[in-house]
Length: 100
Image (cartoon, rainbow, N blue to C red):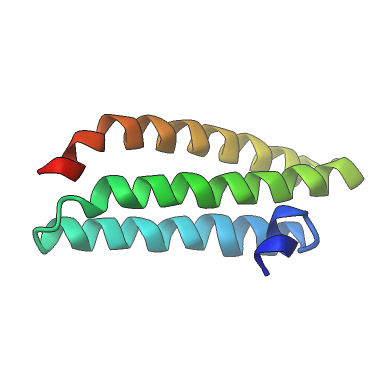
């Protein structure tokens, strides 16, 4: 399934909404619950996992756009690009929390 995601064999809606949006939301909730339960190290860990997941989704969207460029695909591409950059910055910024 992960190979289909990375190579763009899934549809744009499954790739962006199913894996990108819902997967990122799920990982964000795990980080939030870790913070609420006192496991502060979960926050940077979920940002690292979110960056990996969004990079895979970004690869899938890129392969989909190579076949056919659409307006919604371009919007998804730009949103994912911003999300990957922001997740990477947050993961680096919160990295010291892994050692507390």
